[in-house]
Image (cartoon, rainbow over all chains, first blue to last red; front, side, top):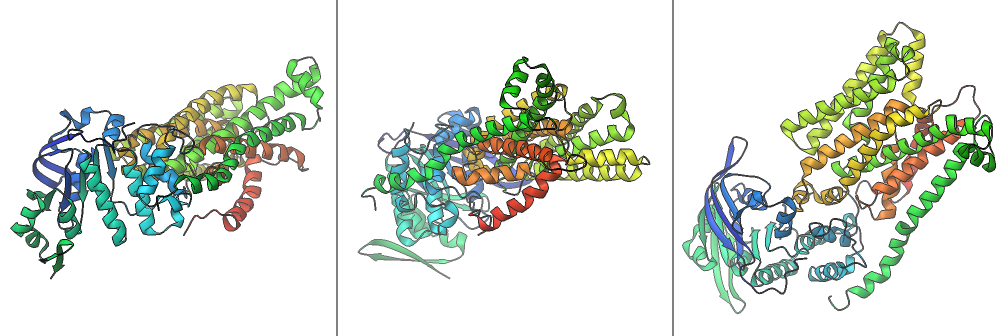
Length: 266
Length: 346
């Protein structure tokens, strides 16, 4: 089991993307991608709706292919077996549909361990403590036995997040993980992701909250019209004013005792 | 919030686990009891001693009744009920849809069409195994068309839509055959056959259907962990290391083989595939993987019990097991859906 919370190496994972075009059918969605990502980075993917952020994440997850190469630890992603890939990559899709079966939260979280043990027992087995710890990390201990269809939307989102985090994969892909979380849990999640990155994991998250993205991430990819317009550290992204351009908004900053904060105005 | 994560969970969880641990033994015991009754009940009632004598061959009269008549019937009701329950749990797991049932992929209707054509053409009278063989061929043809079509587009929804369309097509073709038939005897035979029955089946029917059922069931059981991963959708299942396309093919192929062969020897037996997984689910915390085997056992129990009832209910001609299952099953199921904690909607 690659439970990696206590690992402090910074070379757990290396991703290198050289893609001329990524499309679905005849429609081209992304073009001219060229970047490298390493374990230890917390990368925020920002950009307007329809700019290709989700496609970028699906590409990294191996759910679709493009023209060019995508190397995972020096080997093309599609040369890794499905099982091996699932042990390296965890992916939280932007899927707002709720699970159809009224499974308890605990069993939903345990699904994240399927790549490591196809016949997993959620209790009294070797995974019990790993699952318990992840439930506690995501503040789910009190509702661990409630069916997933009888909890609130934010609680459900936390269960899905815990599912994605429980395996401890070195590459963590999250598509809008802050959706429907309250402010305290938004901050808690960003801290959790930053901790994972500090432990050597590579975190790539699509975020719409510019303030949180620029505060917690170590690197920002700004997408617009299917291309990466800017790829830099948060301070440089903020200084360049590129986010104001791609979103068409004004971003105001203020220095407070709690650090630099950002807010958007028309 | 992190103070004592284990203490509350292990206290509340033990009772929830208990039903799951008891369910399998209870189902096995019930099945054994049903099996004994199925061998004992009929025009000639047999005692336990006579059944045993019949099985070992020490009692010659009982041996003919048990081995030639009731044992094939019992094996068919057990294996076909189990296959239908398993297929229902598998297709619901694959499609993430509590309304799905094996007939949604169209093969049972295609198998029925194959059978109906042999009755219509009179081939079934000249060669007794023409009917099941034609039915299996019908199931295979619809499976190949479905899989070939899905290969071009992919996706679970397309698979189900194509299956549903082929099923309706086969159903309409059966209606067409019935309306074109000038022979009232053939029409009656077709209508009765379509209702489904385990009566008057021989060991040859078992030999003909059982291999397909075993292979079909194995394919569905092989996909078990994938149904669990599919709880959170196709993308999540793929990211957890499951090839959703391969799982769709194996499930559709398994159901085609198993349920196709079941329809070929017993006719159309509906409802078991829809009902069995719903009966199993509350006991297993809705785990799409763990409901497979209990669904199969519940399916076997439903068909075997129904097959005992048709022999007990006094009537001029034996009641068809498929019709009985629908007539008794539908109201019972309706009761469960309305009054029990099955929350299909929010």
